[in-house]
Amino acid sequence: LCPSSGINAEYGEFQTFQHYFKQINLRMVAAEGVVPAEQGAPSTAPADDYDAKCSLTIPIARPLAPKKLGKKLFKVAKSSSKAKCIRRGVKDVAKAIRKGEKGFVVIAGDISPIDVISHLPVLCEEHKIPYCYVPARLDLGQAIGSNTPCSTILITKNDEYKEKYKECIKGIKELPSIY
Image 1 (tube, rainbow, N blue to C red):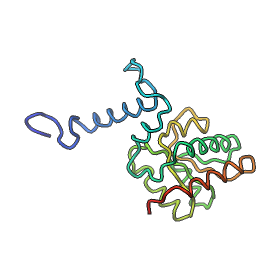
Image 2 (cartoon, rainbow, N blue to C red):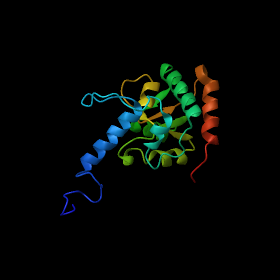
Image 3 (cartoon, rainbow, N blue to C red):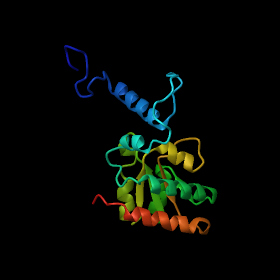
Image 4 (cartoon, rainbow, N blue to C red):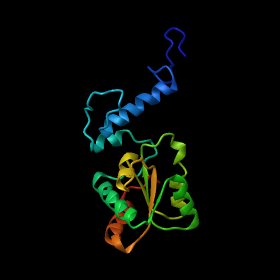
């Protein structure tokens, strides 16, 4: 703490770590177009502003799916959810990958703290499973038909959506690798 002003030098204008994250969450909510109950004023950002959501992603969210690929991923996620060929959540996805399930992984890029999902890219690379990030976990949850946000999903192959699945795999493999 700065003795003269009472402001924490590490977090800039914020007094505590909680104040810092409250501001981050308010910015994320504004980017998603949802107005918290305590604010009451309408949001200035449109609900599907992809660039605003991308600006709020975590530093390790690479490769980040472009908008067009993101829409394809969400369509396949919806189809796989209906066909019951999906694994949802960090624990379930990690367990499925360790047991040898094949498919591709979609990870939300706005997860906090980062430690929750930081092991998934390494796990995917060890098992040669393609993966990519999408900007918002709220969108990922809505794509699979859930009312709650979802941090990660594993989509496995099925005949009902075989063509869309192949397009997504091809799109993910074409993304620039960070390694």
